[in-house]
Amino acid sequence: MDKALQTMIANMPEKTGKALEEWIRILNAQSFSKHSEAVNFLKTKHKVTHGFANTIVALSKEDDSSEDDLITEQYKGKEALLPIYKKLIVYIKTLGKDVKISPKKGSVSIIRKKQFILIKPATKTRIDLGFKLKDKALTKRLENSGPFGSMCTHRVQLTDASEIDKELKAWIKEAYTKSV
Image 1 (cartoon, rainbow, N blue to C red):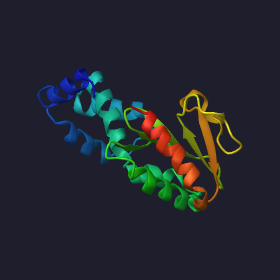
Image 2: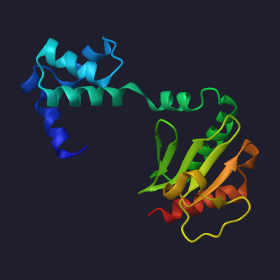
Image 3: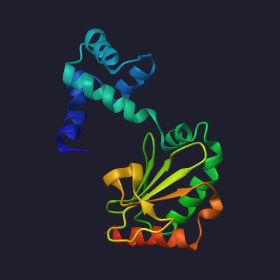
């Protein structure tokens, strides 16, 4: 969180009459389909300035989705892929305490100092596992990054948990090692 945002949150009780957590509870009691509706609600009903209203609404949305919710959403209709995802995560967690698992809306970034793996349920039957492995030769299995573009250098397509074998684990470990 940048310093300006931290300052804004710290000043919120004095400038708006309520702390961020209180504003989020107020917003969660309502139902808005658009960001602008929630901003206008805070501005008109609670006399919050535009800058604070916009910040409150944006931060309330971040609070909406827990990591588990993001994973559940990613694998909705693709539940058959969850055993693959879970087996990957179990292995990835053994690499070190400095590994951060960061779910997003459509994928999960695996980060050390920078992202080194990206897990994406690509279809109902396949997970695409993206790697950052600069200067690594392509193989039949370790393909060009494909749809990942510049986010990754390589990709492996997984359709079964049994494909998380020694070879794949070695590539994951290599990507982890190079991510310092």
